[in-house]
Image (tube, rainbow, N blue to C red; front, side):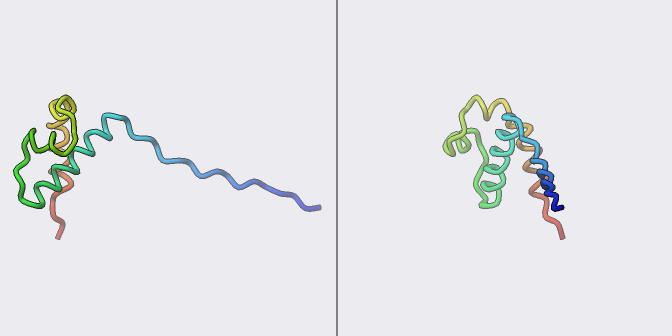
Length: 74
């Protein structure tokens, strides 16, 4: 007799919170600007379509994330 077993479904990756998505987006823009030697200012972030309220709220946390990710590994 042939028995069919269903394969277990792979677990999905945990979803990031809205706060973490915003912080990561700002950090990516900061790293891009620093990599191209552009000054990182609130006005520059706003010019990249990030709302002022989001910049003011998460800029310090995003700077920390950007600094940790921008370290060159040799």
